[in-house]
Image 1 (spheres, rainbow, N blue to C red):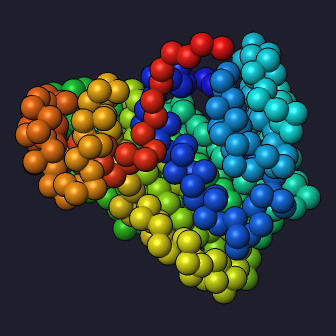
Image 2: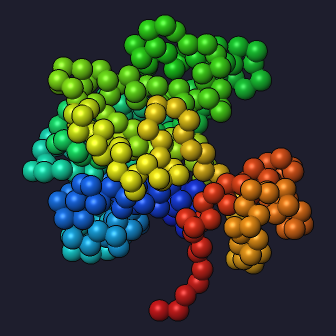
Length: 328
C-alpha cells in the first residue's frame, strides 16, 4: 500500500536491493517449484508498480493482482501498469486477506509501512497463512523503527516506556517476558521477527505437520528502518526437500532461521565512485580497509561507519541500482 511510503523509488537504493534479492530468491526456487508457470503474484504495487514490473521481467507469464486502498493511487497504478498480466483492485488489505482464495500456489507480499497498525498487520499475516495453498511464498514487510514506540528521547525511562508500549500489543508472543534491550534500535527488528515466528506457529498449530519456513529476512532504511521476511508454507517433510535444493542452499542470502536478518545499508555512491570500487573487486573484497584507503574519503560520518557501508556495498554490488538519465 502506498500510505506512509513517501519516498520515490529512485531515491530508495536499499529497498531496490531488497526487491532484487526477492526476485533472485524466486528465481532460485523456480526449478523446484515451477514458479514461472504455476504461481500468481499478489502485492501492494504503490504508484510506481515497481515490483510488478521487475517480476514481469523474470516471470513474463505470471498473473498478478495489485491491491490499493486509496482511489487516487489506484488511478496512477492503472496508468503505470507495466503489462497486461496485472490487474489493480481498490481494496483494503484486511478485506483482501479475509477473502483470499487463490486457485493455486501464490506469491503474496504484504508490504506494510504504517507502524501504528502492526498488530493488525500481524493478524492479517496469520489469516493469510491459513488461506494459501501449500508451497505458497509469503513475504511481509513491517516498520521496524524503534522510535515509533514513542517515549521521551533522553529520558532515563525511555526503554522501559517503549517496552511497555510494545508489550501492550504483543505480550502474548513473549510468555517469558522481555528485557529492555529488545526495544533498542539494533535489536528491535529481531524482536519483530520473534513476533512473526510466534504468530506463524500459533496459527498453523492445528494443521497437522504444517509450518511457515523462513527463507530470508533483511533490514533496510531509506528513511525509517524496515524489516522484511520471506518464507514458504507447507508440510514439514515437503519443505525440507525444497530447502535442500542446490540453488537455494548455495545462496549467500539464505536465512532459514528466525534471527539474524541481513542488514542492507549501502552508501550513496556516484557512478565514478562505483567504478573505482568495482575495479578493486573481487581481489580485495575481503580487505575493506584497503578499498577505503584507495577511495580516499569517507562515505559516511566516520571511518567505522564508512567502512561498514563499503562492506555492504561489496556484498550487494551486483544488486546495487544505478539511476541515470536516458533519452527515449
